Length: 291
Image (cartoon, rainbow, N blue to C red; front, side, top):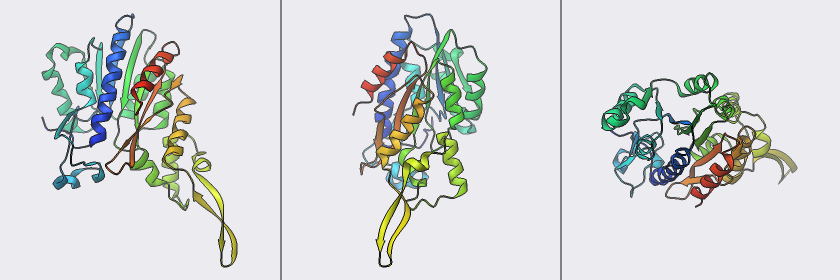
């Protein structure tokens, strides 16, 4: 099956951490009386293949290509299907027609799980809002993996996920590849970009957190100007703080995923929804996220 061209060394690291959490999660939930689901939004093909240097133009973000990566990596969808004990249901959401068809092939590779694999061709934000809002979660629990390419995940979607009080969420926050790029140093941000950031963070106070008015000495005296003062660490802390406003528990140590120059590309974040299980979930996730 043709792989989904995306990723680099950080992809393997990300997937290894997700694998460890899923393994721990299913072992704990197997002893409890819940129906469990693994939900993968923006699921792609379920695989991650790496593009070599001659094909970097095919990547959405060319800098993600790394010379020393494997040609083929299993994706989060594939990993979820391999963990034991198994989940009750597997839900993969993908709006791209080609990727949707590729995901359906997972049923052929796992005939023993075929009847419990659901592949939805849908907009992930719309599907998750409907599923989370109009579903009884009292006897159900889930692990959700949000792995978009950029800023497709809306804060309003994350809010309905948190309100279920039943979902543990892993989110790949586009720290360097999207958010930091939009935060111009001089603070001159277009209304369209400003609105996009508001929608992504679910708040408009990000500008006060990332920018300050600074005084500068010039030949004509002191002048004041807006300047970006937030680095990757400050942006990360702000997003964790936003997650804490809606989730029962949030991992304090999200993992920066960097390129070969050690520049952060993404931030692997974790948040727990259920009040009773949050303490254990956070403890496991924070241990897994340690560098």
